[in-house]
Structure formats: structure tokens, C-alpha cells
Image (tube, rainbow, N blue to C red; front, side, top):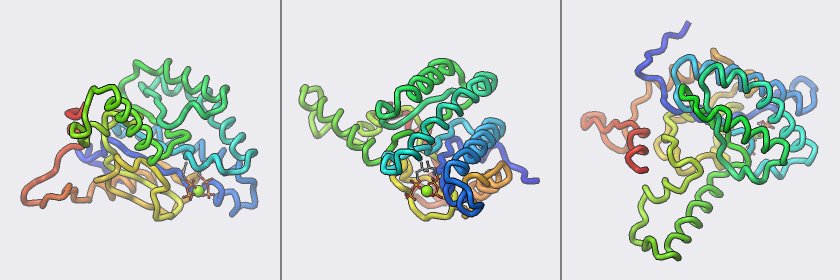
Length: 255
Ligand code: IPE
Ligand code: IPE
Ligand code: MG
């Protein structure tokens, strides 16, 4: 059993859920079977996060670059998302989970988008945990979209280029109120970020595990949190000067 100090629970956990295809291949199954099993892992990790007191959980479910995959796989993934949202709405409502999405949501097929927006609306007043799904999401695209909005403000004469600061950029991210992740987990052993939350992870602790996403369960997750608990976060300072600050607090001050 792993004991976790509630004071050291990361406030915001972000996860790159990778390895569904390899999980299926290892078993001689179709990739979609891996995605189906991956959806069960999502359920377990959402439940565990809520239980241990994580306030923000952000899951990379579909990247902007994932549109490059074969049409059939994309279609199956979108259907799976629809099914997941339908199946989990009650669970989210019963457990105080507020759903939201970041990414170019307008690109999702109409059926999936409708259910997504409906679930977002129905869970809007929940306040125990925020579950953010990154869908058709790209970190570079998010920054481009933010810069465009800032450009518009300049065109309208509302600000000048001298007014642009970190706060300005943060204000125009897909979710300006989201605290920066404390812990970023990537499954399946790849040592890369794959265009996830580029701006927000500047000082995030990174945990990479070889476990494939469909096998990532409560036990593996608690191990990642236990590992995080031992990290020394310095944010560019030294331990002696006690530079630790809560990135969430900083974010609140920005908006
Ligand atoms: C992650 O698993 C799910 C998505 C990106 C949608 P993959 O489908 O990338 O699985 P691998 O990396 O091919 O094993
Ligand atoms: C990252 O996984 C995106 C998601 C988990 C949704 P990918 O499988 O798309 O990443 P790469 O291609 O291995 O970098
Ligand atoms: Mg992958």
C-alpha cells in the first residue's frame, strides 16, 4: 500500500495517454481494441484523481496531429469518445466532476461535439474536480490562436506591443483559469511532449513510465504521485531561498 501525504498531492495532473496501439499489437488485436481498453483506464484514473484530491486533471485524448491517422481510426476514436461521454455523464454528476475541453473543438464531428458540449453544460456547476479533455489540441496551435487574439487587440488600439507580458499570453490560452500542471505523466515510454501544453509546462515535473496506457491503473498512478512527492521544485531559485510557490496561485493573479 502506498501512503500519500495529502499536502503533497499535485493540484493539477496532466497526462499524455500513449500506447493504446502497441498494447493491442502485442496481443494481435486491432488498434481500436487498445483504444477501447484505454477508455477503461481513463475511468480508473479519473476516479482515483478525484478520490485522492487532485483538483485539475487534464488528459491528452486527441492531438491536432492525430487527424493525420487513417480515416477509419479517427472515426472510431471519435465514436469511442462519444460513447465514453454518454456512459460517464452520471458518474461525473454524482462525483462533482466538471468537464471541459481545450483544443480546436470546432473540428470534431458534429455528433461528438454535441455530446461534449452537452456534458460540459450539464457538469458546469460541479466543483470537486475539473476534468479537461485536450481534443484536436496542439500546444503550438494554442499559442498561435492566443497571438492572433492579442494581434486583434493591438489592431483595435486596445493595447500596444509594449503591454504584452506573460500574463497577456496566459490570458488568451484556451483555458486562462487553468493552473499550470504540477505533474505531467507520459505512458508508453516515449521521451517527448508531442505538442502538449507547451506554454503551461515550463516548470512542471515530468514522469515517464514504460507502462502502456491501457495497463496504467490506480497502482501505477499512485506510484507516479509518490515519485512527484519526493521531487524538489525550485522554480529557478535555490532550496535555501525557498522559491517554492504554487503555480496555481500565480495563475490566479494573472487573470
Ligand atoms: C494513444 O495511443 C491514443 C491516441 C493518441 C489517440 P496510440 O494510438 O498513440 O498508441 P501507440 O502509440 O500507437 O501505441
Ligand atoms: C500523443 O500521442 C497524443 C495523445 C496521447 C493524444 P501520439 O501517439 O500522437 O504521439 P507521437 O506521435 O508518438 O509523438
Ligand atoms: Mg502513440
